[in-house]
Length: 159
Image 1 (tube, rainbow, N blue to C red):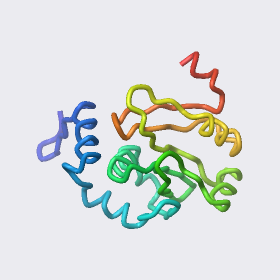
Image 2 (cartoon, rainbow, N blue to C red):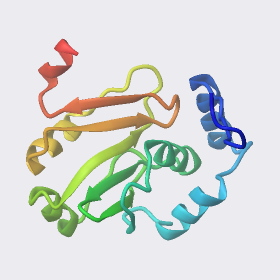
Image 3 (tube, rainbow, N blue to C red):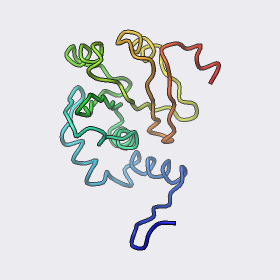
Image 4 (cartoon, rainbow, N blue to C red):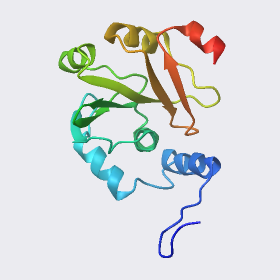
């Protein structure tokens, strides 16, 4: 139980998926926080810094549901980066790729339009190999479900 005056939030995975669907169909919009995020990266290929640990997988799921584009969260020692991708992929510019390769940034998560099973593409796995990163996360902007994946597709057989 929470303390007196402490707000308790009850929610379910079903309500999350329902909210994403409402945003996708235009029945609902983004909250003020996510609208401000999108205003900072309005076009595909845009990226900007945010306070470290201020971006969540739910944020990018809702941004994707609203725009139909993939989004990614990159994280450094002192900052988060929100990247606005395209309909079916995120293509990072050379500066971001170099920061990822050097370990100054990490690809925390990106969004996918997967409905049932969240499956990393060959490009997703190849990109992790290219930047030398062990694993990352995909969030579905259809269901809100998340999947951690590695560069090695055979790792999925044992998880």
